Figure 1 (cartoon, rainbow, N blue to C red):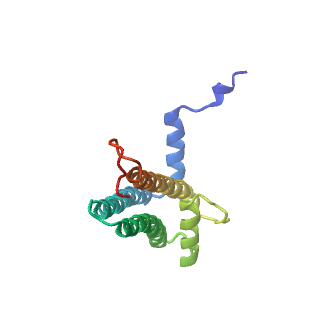
Figure 2: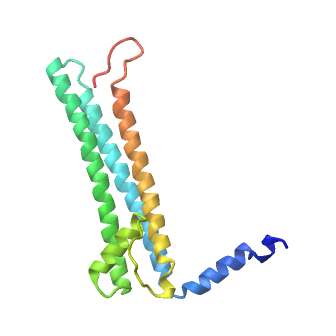
Figure 3: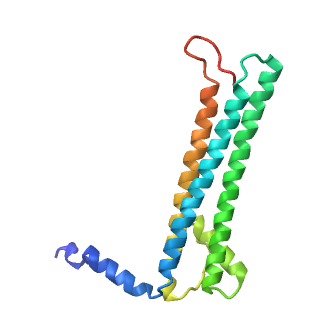
Length: 180
């Protein structure tokens, strides 16, 4: 017997999933997650731009003494770690935004439950044994997707900043040393 005869078509699968969702507020959630990811992307982009401007400013002065050069190197490294903290803060804001979205939908009785649920789903930890209505079963998937996507954007940005920092410390083509 062929195992594939029992598989539904893709359109049938999505029809069944959509029928199981049941709550029309899901479209509000999809619009919310789209806006949240755009805002997260813009925020991370602004952090990266600010980081690059700072590093370029730190390294632009070619007539500095060795003591100043060491201070500029330290400042650039500190800027990198501050940028990482800003990115982490952005993720905390995302979780708080999800918390308020969940509170507005009245899915949980208490606000801390909404916060813990949002946090666990965002980081795809999923340790809690939350009982949510059948019509909201898709919500953890949407929150987890947003968390994975936001973390991917942030990881790429942090990698870009680290690469920039390391490029500044490589020797130049003419045998000289770059300023950081």
